[in-house]
Image (tube, rainbow, N blue to C red; front, side, top):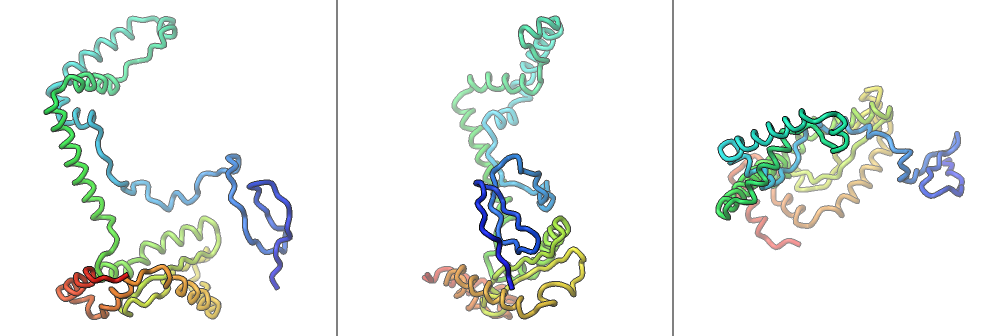
Amino acid sequence: MTTTCPKKKLKDGQPFIPSSGLNYLHVTDSTDSSLALANPFACLVPANMPKPPRRMSEISMYMKIHYELRMKAEADRHLVIAQREYEETTEDERIEMDLKPPVPLTIRLETAKQFWATESNETKAAVHENIEREYTAAKEAWETKHQVPKTPQEYHHQLQTAAQYLKPIVNSIAALMNVPVVMMMPVPIPEKNGEIECLSVHSRPSGLESATWFREDAASYEAAEKSLVAWGKTQFSKWIIVVFERFTYQTLFWPGRCACQYSRALTSNVN
């Protein structure tokens, strides 16, 4: 018998923690900053994960192209002057004038802005062209590494290799929270003509594979899987299903024929 939590009037945003013997149902989100903690799951995301490229600022590109030949001597001169002025003032004068030690990078940037203000339209246009050229190249390279699968071969490869990327994440969450974790996803299976099935990854803090949900309670797991698959079928467009229905498992290994059939599928009018 399932015992639900008794209703209790709470303040806005206050979580309800059930007493012993009561099943946990739901905890409301709280925006109270006093309850905020450092994200314990940040370690699951690589710190060096590449971000989408951004356009370089015009001053940065201008300095990249012309700093050494056009601006360096003048920037160095400004830096020497600023350093001398700072050294010749007393501590009291620095406090009164709010004078800070000169920062070389800031002086270089200010010098570049002065030069940029007097540059010709031709030079500025060339700088902007370089910005767009570098941004386009960087964006194409980034998209190539992060593109979603577009062909049945690519999708098949992604399914075959998904576990090696998902398993460490699931294991880490299980270890961090000391709870069993199940990741379930409804996906079209190419070798089954696009039939939606469940892809799942399991982990327990104990690390015992024999103690996972689908091994200990197969009936309830299969019921949950069927429910997820039924919902998943509503999430894929008819176009996706038809594309996969046009391929057999053998077709995935015939690149020439596959590319031709996939091209025709892309041009068909499927809603």
